[in-house]
Image (tube, rainbow, N blue to C red; front, side, top):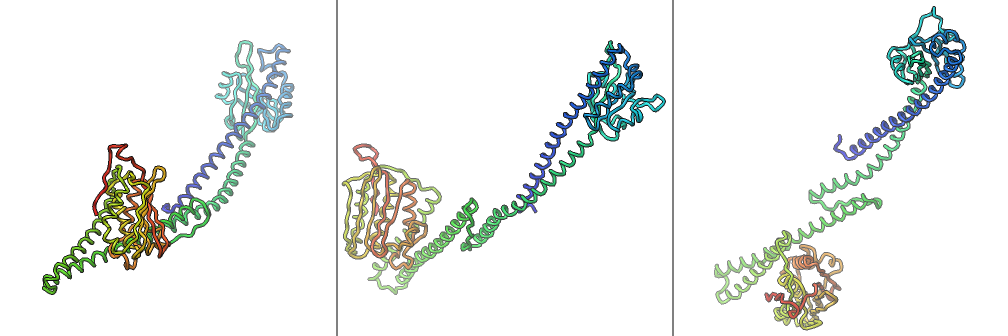
Length: 510
């Protein structure tokens, strides 16, 4: 059940909301209860002190400070009037006068007081006598005042807040007390009603937010579900699934990134298929040629005077296979991070001249109009000489391969700030505009018909791009299909031999 993100999300929300509701209810009721109790305590304190002070004045006038019980017995109506007068200003208050034994001798205030001393609030000693609970009386004897919430051992029908002030004789002994009390039922009703109100309000709010949360979470989760289904399709090799983009938030950005990933996977899958087709073709064709000619020589089908010619063809096909294997090994090393590049100073102009000279025969075969342009005779750059030589050879070889007969073939090396720009230009087939963004991709081969390029497998430019990236430089291509093409790469400017003893020597391999 809790495997779903939506269920987890909604459950967490409900738990948090309920916890907040309970905490809020507890805090509010506690604050209100404390405040109400404090207000009622101050009211009862004032009432008790009023009666206490008034009775004390009477004791002093009559010189009866040591005999409170006698004073109450002689003046019950007067003291009772004091008790009743308090209830004029304070509703639901019960006032009691207690003698030194804890016996309730006078009561006044609310109707609840009648249960202690009859209807007139004055104790008739022939009636049943009510006493304060022993524990309460003990606390009262030991304090200047005492407050407690109690039922007086069942004398009150519900809990009352009781505030008492004791009288003491001239020796400090307990002589009696005035007790002011008021029931807490109104507060309990208020707190109960408040709790219900908070609960119902929170419940409705929670219901409303739950509905909103459902739609929000559904909007968040549904694209994830769709991506999960699409990912399962990718696992089966189906890369044509795309998700609709709604809005411009983070989820929309995630969907866009997911669709881009799907397009990249589809492109890589297409490149993989093309690569396998190209590699299969490039492996099968020379192997078929080699096998056929060797069988012909062994069977005697090819005359001896032709052996040298056909062995030359076999050698050419073997070199073709060797180039393919080398390219695949380069790819493997680059992807595994095993190929390390060491930057040294070298003369980029001299390197390009050597590669150009090594291609002289092929240039003459196509009668190319060659231009070689450098800002100066010697220009020094920083880079791994073997790796840069591989790039230069690949670009210049491709330019010759795809040039028109008699077309222009131009090598240009310029300096701009701290960068050396090397470009290779040729007039020929060029590259279609739609293919330009993919030229440096793995396994990509623009000449899919294989009509012009019968030797490559679409890895040379990917290797060149990887090498240039490892140097922290850039490589780019410009082309007008059917007319011309130009590849340009950059290198950091190096120092001449006159400025440093560290001089890299260009690779002279052809």
